[in-house]
Image (cartoon, rainbow, N blue to C red; front, side, top):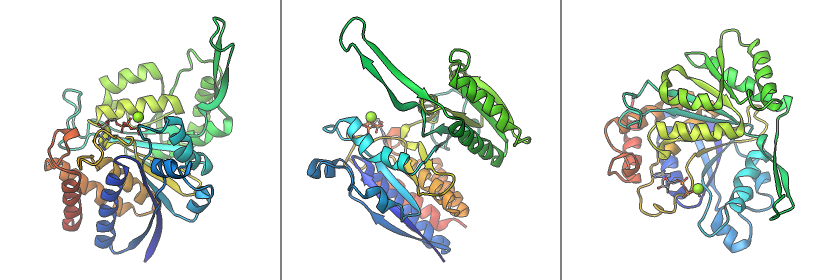
Length: 356
Ligand code: ATP
Ligand code: MG
């Protein structure tokens, strides 16, 4: 029997509530399947630790994580700790330190959950957005001169490297190839940005030669937002830069009904290091402790984790259970129901146990 070592980092706000839910579902799956077990170690890293000790995680935290097969992450952020402290103190060191350059964000309308788009239901919107997660607009390079003066200048430098673009493009083409429609849309803004974005277009054309069975097209990011709303059926796999995909995936999440159902995986495709799986949403202190956080995004990212670990059948079983529970109307308030986190979790675990 295969045993996977999982590092759970529930962290802040509703993070511990949704990670607890996710671990219950994973436990039900392992028992139901019988082919694998999960050896879970929980870490108390996050904003409370920062307030106690001045650091969100120990200095050798990343080193400790290297021994694990995957990282199951809740949410980080607290009202009384600056955003850049929490982001740079925990999530980014893991993403960057482990070169998790592919950020994969599936979006699909689940049964029982309404899209704000009229006439669009399950099956009409089934996308995976691949976000470049290691360079681009969030390089952190730039500066400000003549601060506060009328002649002040601020620069923000986007860095695109041939290595960085080629590897994300290859990942996206491969993912598109693995999906039934074998369809990829490459998003840039190469009409207005003449260097890095034109390089993206050129590298897309080069890499496409390796995937003759994938149909692909190019979209400018502004036109892409219109297409997502007007013609969601025409899209399948989407690849975009760090900034563009950040924005597009928020739109995608909203079109699928709620932030509470949107998952994400930060993947090192070369498998040199553990990859990290988390819901897209943040710590949501407004609902923390109320027992109403939607655990669906966390179940979904747990399914991504199982798939990455090679347990595809368990991943499918988990998503089938989630879809059944949503279709049955066992929903938290953010998606129009009145169930608690625990009621949704219990229903998902029951569906896992009852699934043949
Ligand atoms: P952070 O600062 O960590 O990003 P946040 O409080 O700014 O967190 P998010 O958690 O990203 O915000 O979400 C915004 C709002 O969406 C929350 O205030 C909450 O009401 C709602 N929300 C987010 N996640 C969930 C969820 N899992 N279940 C229900 N509602 C959610
Ligand atoms: Mg926020």
